[in-house]
Length: 209
Image 1: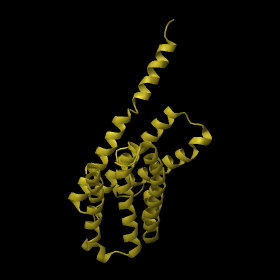
Image 2: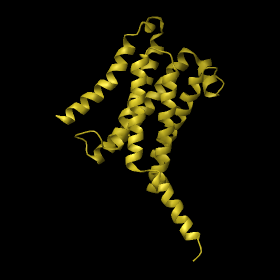
Image 3: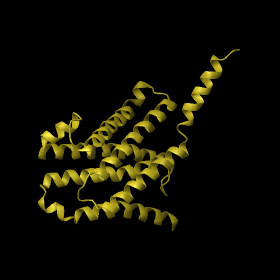
Image 4: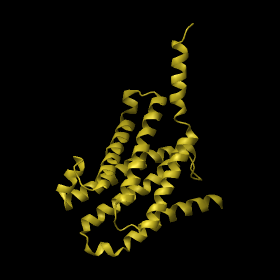
């Protein structure tokens, strides 16, 4: 019963802002490619709620190992949604995208979106090269978590600053859920304690004998 309620709550949290956006009167004056690009961005934002829940093993019925496998595949989908979002914007207004990529856009939300985009690509690249580079687990966890925080904060600020088809209240509430879920998994996994332990160990080894 409890597990069903959690899944239902997650589905409702994702479906509600998307449904509100789908019925927005602003879409009547938008190009189909632009609309598809916008919904790709919304789906990417939705995945930012699912990803920490998978990484932390919080979703009922999914043990930790299968959940983290789904987390990896969801990461690939996230990258695809980001690419689709940017590509759609490029097709509708390439000069605006160029300005955004060069951090020359007059709109503040563009900077946050571009930073989140590059952090998403960096996280995916790090995950792809993890085995080949033989990255130590502690370094991997700190690096991946740091990039994830940049992705989440950048994406949330980007979404909140954009005045689009998503409802203001539903978008704000969803972004709050993303921030809370991310903060919880970072706190529960105690990622940053790895840094403090490493520093204390190094200090003890370099101290007087």
